Length: 296
Image (cartoon, rainbow, N blue to C red; front, top):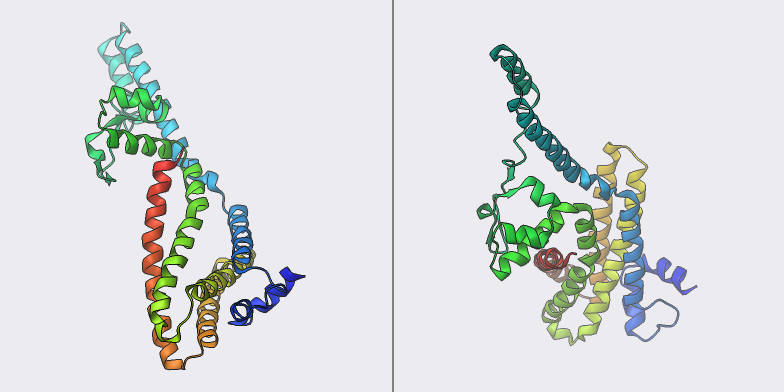
């Protein structure tokens, strides 16, 4: 009963945070518990409708290139061993140019990455494609003389990600929770500063933010289900409507809970939105970096 009652009253802006802070808590779910329930629901919907295996396309393409490059290597050795006339050699050369010209010999097919990854210049490391995808990582680092500790850490994780991009993305999505939680706790500090004259407790701001995220997760989960059942045109309408509903709900929740006038609420709500996305972007960057370094 508390679950259904909480879901029903969640759609009344500002109601659940007030009930919780005024001590009427047994009838409703704990805000943090409610937050995690809707988060699990959202991640379940995302996992159901997202085919992460499509990311393995890059692995399959590289496997294909490696296979053809190995064939080209064997073919060239075979051709050089044949006692053939110049005219026959010209025929084989023509065949090679038409079929195999876009592929390099497996011992020459290096992969270059023009990026700096956590302070490591990847342009300095030109791994052969077959080694990048098939060689044992420790052997790979030894063969290409990667000796610096940090370079070994970053390149090891980079190779793991390249070999299993779907798993790496799922690992990152699973860790997004830490980015959202960090954002809530940090934004709560700024909200205490915004409402410093009201003598509000920090926990009040945290409860409000947990409630707003709970509503957002529920709306996004529902809109994702709707978008999957409609064509591409209405999908943008559903997405825009969901965004508008979340923003309106958030504004009304702030207005009703803190009880300030519309002008002050508009100004503070605008500051909160700006701070939220700045903090979220920063925290997601930290989570992405940590996920990349910790992925196994």
